[in-house]
Length: 133
Image 1: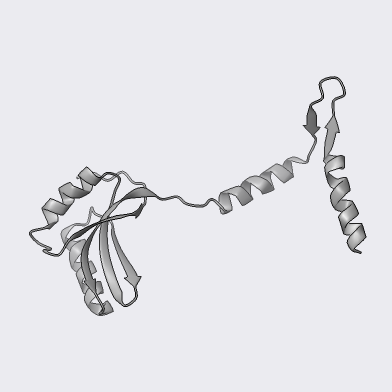
Image 2: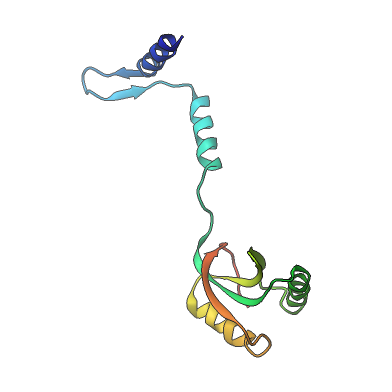
């Protein structure tokens, strides 16, 4: 059975390829469905849709309910800024923004610092967006 599978694996490329004897180029004559399947697989396994950027950590606590309450309060005050709750045992961290540049993050850092005294500017993977004030 193994020999049959191995032999089929060796013959498959030979069946899909034909060599042009004049130019020496290999021409692949495959069903278009194969390309569609390969493209779907490539899209499915695309590694990362995020980019390098910055977020501002506005809150951290070991109490999940406290973190959720702070999340709701922040959303009411700043609905235009994306907000993320991240759990790094044992802390729940509330991070805001999808800032593509450090300057943009520092602007919001200065704006939020009066209201949130314990801010941290954090390099992170961010979601691409059209964020503006």
